[in-house]
Image 1 (cartoon, rainbow, N blue to C red):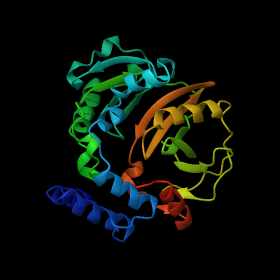
Image 2: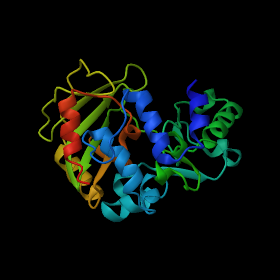
Image 3: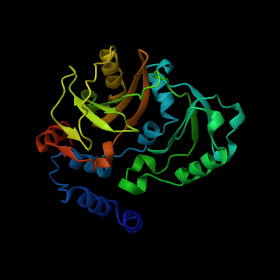
Length: 279
């Protein structure tokens, strides 16, 4: 049913498509004349605050140059290879552990823990499927529409066998205000929200809070400073970082968190987030 709806709405104007998708997710329509919640304003930004330069920041390959310019290449995950097609991948030249990802969207990562156990033909087939996706059509996020697709091979970060927490900094007008931490993303995905002093906020964005005690990263102040530098000049942007073995790594930049479709509770928190986006 979702695939059918996506195909049908593909031929609609962006504003109407967004309204339909939003209603399916939130059971209400958006007031574009007076958006108030975080998700409402994310939809407004999609339609009325797009710049052609945005593609550079969401392109997982091109953004590396931007990060190097702003904070230095030492925060980048080691890049092993870049290809234009899955057929170009030289499997024999890959290290034993690595990550394969497309540069043009989300959910297109393949984690290789042991090269000897993989089936290159199967992975090539999966990469072809992923490569056909254009994330613009899902939520009409213009930055993704014209990305020149590439396959990136990166080092697989080692956290002593444990899953890596994902630290997502919600930044408004160049100021990080909230830190979203995604825990156990590939097994039992939970999510906590903190303020900049690492106080847990009684709220949730799409996923339940974790029952685990999540320690404040030792280099939180440096992470906040990085998010501030990278978010400068944007009404809203999310800066994703990793903290592994006492080292900070850049993850990605996102203009429209969850495409503006993730449920945020309580309403007061969604309104608070929304109030920070000045339109």
